[in-house]
Image 1 (cartoon, one colour):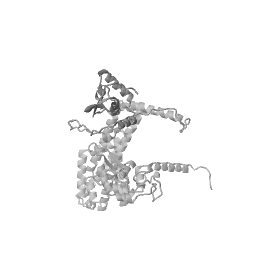
Image 2 (tube, helix red, strand yellow):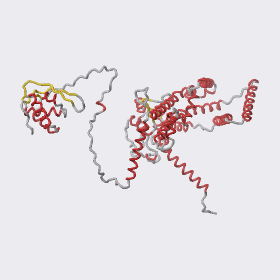
Image 3 (cartoon, one colour):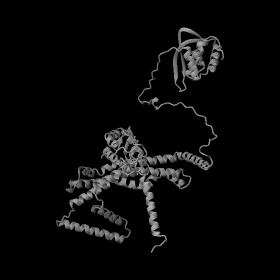
Image 4 (cartoon, rainbow, N blue to C red):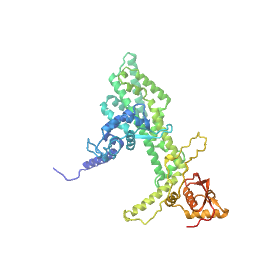
Length: 526
């Protein structure tokens, strides 16, 4: 029998599937998914694993490029189609299967290692860090890359996760949490008595010579499961840093927001409250860091690790696994300290942002931008995009200079004056001067007035005299204009020269040796 009535259970299930699809669409844009779906994923993952082996979590740019360059042929061998389409599955780059050197970038043969590294940074496969302890920018694998590598490694090892040891770890944690959170005094006392009876039973059996040990295979499985959990912490440290920055950004947005709990947040920050530490991610990391730096806990744990390394079953571990076991806690200190440094710097920056009243300026700017955006949105349907706008703006003139023209200051330099640049003197003909005047738009009328003013007071005047009383308003162009006027209206003193000085528009002073010309009469105004 068929019914047309709606099935509520089916509708709810369909809604849940649609919501999950939307969630997966969002995850598909994440760096981990895009890296795994990339056309060059095998080459990129293999190179990143070789570039960042155990112990090299961060590399300077020069060394990173050198290591990637050693395996550049693997990337060139995997060059995909020029349109960014994956030959394997036909998925376009815009849908997540972009080549690993950057979504939407055209795959070009012969790309350099530096280009690949920059592309991986844009895609989120590498994280760039400016370390004050280093003179060069450093890079490290992102949390997304570590997750991708761990996922691929789990497929390669084919180790099942449903092991007896992992089930025991889960049960033990459930049992411990239930005991520690029990509020009924009688139930908790009964649990402690049962635990005491089990311990006393083990003591009696051990005293009678019975020594029950788990099999070597079971012990090795448990140890490898523990090492796997410890290895996953490395990616968590990177995620901690990103989460803390996200919390910091959210707090700043709330401070600038005209609504919400802005006043309460400002009061807490002004009172010195560590809102970053009070967040979920902050509390989780603080508890972890406190336990990691507990001297008694660290000493006891290291003794346990040393005892395990002496067991016979630990000989079944590979050399890499034994090294990871020996350094399982010492390898956590440096990345944990880095997370703490990031948390501390973010807290100080947020406190300065509030106490210096900088947030007020940001808020005014934000309100102005929102107001302008509102006006633009209100006019978007009334003003055609291609219609001329009745507004004229004067182009501003600025003096541009290359960064290479700037010289860095050396603190050890005593400040000796730089040597003056001396150029070979060349004679300029009247024709050359005319061309310079015509092509450079020199103000001859103004220069003529300067010549007549200076000559009228002293009876005669040289080019140097005029420049001393009437500074060159056009720089070298004024000097050339005076030379042009002198060739027609001044008397030259044969074999004699003089030094003229002027200041250019860039503020620097210049000097030149020119022939001696003397204006004896007024220059006619043309």
